[in-house]
Length: 495
Image (cartoon, rainbow, N blue to C red):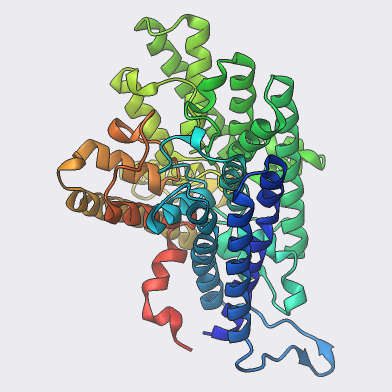
């Protein structure tokens, strides 16, 4: 393990987060609020942490030149995993400071929870009344979503060459999904292309929401939460506050788009739209969405909950919100039939496409698992038949199949273990269904759960120990499990 190299990259992460405080500082200055000083203090603390980490990286000199030519000091798999896991901890540690210094939250546990929920695009909150929070803090809260959505590491890849650090191993470790696609020969250019798409979607949604009556502040915050599939709103009632079918349909469309592999957005924008439309994961994702939305709408209409038109709009919004693990709310789904509640919670398990900002297992893994099951059933009927698992016409290697099966198994193990821990730590305050939905909401990066963790409730009433367990689940779910689990293996840290 090249500890000094890891420290240098973590120093950059702390620096990036600290510099991002300048934007909410601008909001506080415009509003003439006292949070100007809270963010100024957070900036100073973040820069101090960055300087300390940078100093550690120069306890010994790293070679940057070989035989007279510039050379990268490459991140190996150990360094990449350590940087990915620890960078989110560093980002959350620094990003929690404004919540604490501003007085929006009174304990560091709550501040850390809120920041972790933001950076992992989960959307769980411990702030009980958003009307009492300044616009600067609300903006920073939504901005943590936007930064975490595409990944702090992918953002930093564009500047890593200046530090003499190569980045492909880092990209492989952070980008969601089992087989991240390198769009260009240079990973830095890949990161820039992905961010261009990300910014484009954010800008388009902001404009469309403003056309629907939102002011710039609300439109920008909701665009951050949508494109990042995060779900933080500036209103206690979330999107339901606006009572606008237009706003709901706009956000539904962008939630669905954010759950699509960003490689497909890139292909679509560069003329490869036919290949994008034929992608089997995207087709299954679309079928899940349309089928679930249709079923939920039918149940709501037949039960007499809403009219036909409102049933379709409410179903499409909540299905998109849960399936992409965004977590926005347009209706009080806790009052819906229990069948519907359970169905949309299952959709959070499935999640979005690989390479999207959504959480969950990812649709491509379900596709592979389904075809593995089909292959085993077929081999039972025809023992001598030679069958192969294919996705998009390509044979899935045995190694990739084993990786998917292992991921699914590990996901279930973490889910069961975390649920038991939450029930044990929650005492009489937390019943079993609520504990299960809380773990699902955290591990899938969904945010709102069922029961006492659904709308309009928050996570504020939970014991501190349960909040830390949920923080672990949020981090593990966002970083695809392995990047977090391997931090606890001694072999990861050996030289």
